[in-house]
Length: 162
Figure 1 (cartoon, helix red, strand yellow):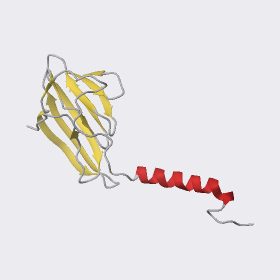
Figure 2 (cartoon, rainbow, N blue to C red; figure 1 turned 135 degrees about the vertical axis):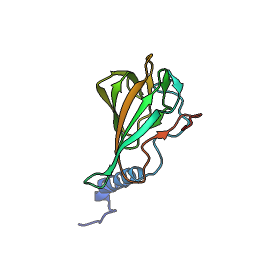
Figure 3 (cartoon, one colour; figure 1 turned 90 degrees about the vertical axis):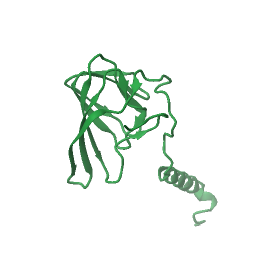
Figure 4 (cartoon, rainbow, N blue to C red; figure 1 turned 60 degrees about the vertical axis):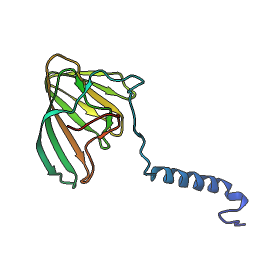
């Protein structure tokens, strides 16, 4: 006897279909995971004075073989300063050419990176990078992202891009 999709024998199918639809709808949601203002990483305000990266130079901006945008930027993080708490929608990585950096990432302990090291910036995760040393740090940031998307989204209030 066939009772169809909504018959008693198909109760499990109904539950499975409803669950699948719910998961698909939540995955298609455009609501951002993080919204501003965010003022702490792991419950603490990161050390360092808020200041944009200085002396920035776009070293490379090109299209990858799969149609994405590749950006490589060099800049100086002044001693005692940090970037505002932010996310990178598509992640990225930073290499420290000189000086030292401390990376504050939500859900992780602060990590320290001396000259000659690189670190990964996970996608869609609040973070802030600070130069807590006494000398300026020179950095190279690399991002691969779709055209029309920003490399960084600042979530911390009182941030200024100057």
